[in-house]
Image (cartoon, rainbow, N blue to C red; front, side):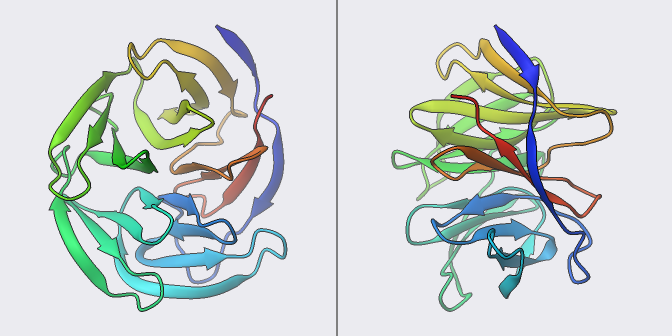
Length: 210
């Protein structure tokens, strides 16, 4: 297993209208983050918010190329980012113990924090397709270039780790500075991750190792 210190490239926030940063996703142009009662779209170059959507947003956020998905307690809402309308709802696999959310290859991937699992689920029905076990509390989840990464956060210790999507074996760890937690996690598809900072109200860009 490779281990290194996470390189934080940039910090955003805290924001006046967002008490926390829960889930995080990226639509190719904007970083979306969940603050509890709203979804916020941020321009990562300027650091400015460009819009918000009023929707319950207690945990992970994902984008499938057209629609947003948002964990709200024990449900996952499919949201049209153009109108802010909830289009459909499925049950969350952790029944309220859910954390991260990602989209990849036609499936939603859901972190279960205290259950220490990642589920692959059907985005139409919520049916579980695969379960991956972890040895740490799971927070944000993301896929990039066929690699599965997730955040962890226990006490003052947090990291971003790459795991084998079949066995759950930890292949690489990026250790966050002490006291710096990872809630949501998303890749920009290139050289950085965006990581939510939970109750700190901050969003951080982390360099993705190559």
